[in-house]
Image (cartoon, rainbow over all chains, first blue to last red; front, side, top):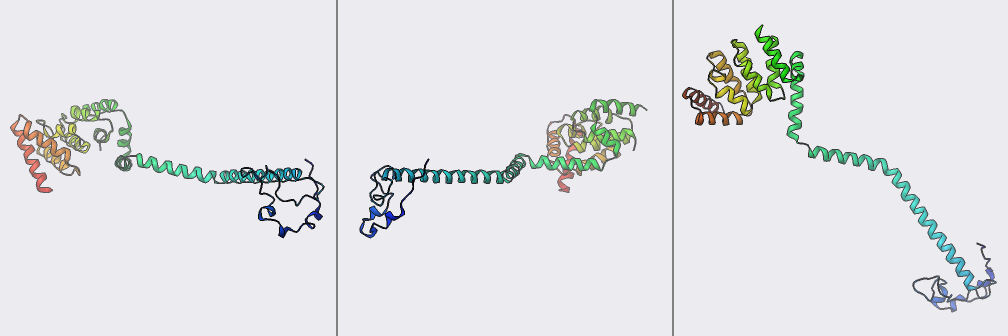
Length: 148
Length: 118
């Protein structure tokens, strides 16, 4: 888009203190829904080589670009924050899942399982071996031992 | 420790409850006192209704063994149990429901001993 040039002298020819409050604000338009849609209340551009419509289109365009840029920037920041926090969020998730699993576990069973493992460690190595064998094999083994 | 005693100890700690049947069939019927004694300890350690019933409600086994040494050793291992809930339940059921007076009397004596030691 071609950026229109603005004659800076146009502001010198106007006594702004005489205009109403609305006239001092170039963004106040007839339409309350779209501040850029209506005609300009003030005539600050009246001596300009560009007309009001062009000025407004330019301002609207730039405002839109500014807003879009800002939103884009915010989006980028948001995404970068997400990426930055992702490992922490993932870790927190895993910790939370771990605690959930711990809560679901029966503490009594867990403790008795640990106690059982510890008591096995103190046993004779042959006893440990027999504990791991199937009972059917132990029956045969014991019968053989007792018959000797 | 002989291999037989090691197997008996392993059966007392085995996670498969079928181990109780092996101890009952082979251990409690052994002619050797030492084997019966260790079998009683293994059954006592399992501390289940089934294992305790063998030691309490059967003639010639566990606390009813003809050998004083085996019987007293069994009583001792039962008294050492930290959780006696199952033991008291089996004793009460034996005292109320067993047909053998001798078995009832022995169970009653053991219950009295537990009450005294508590």
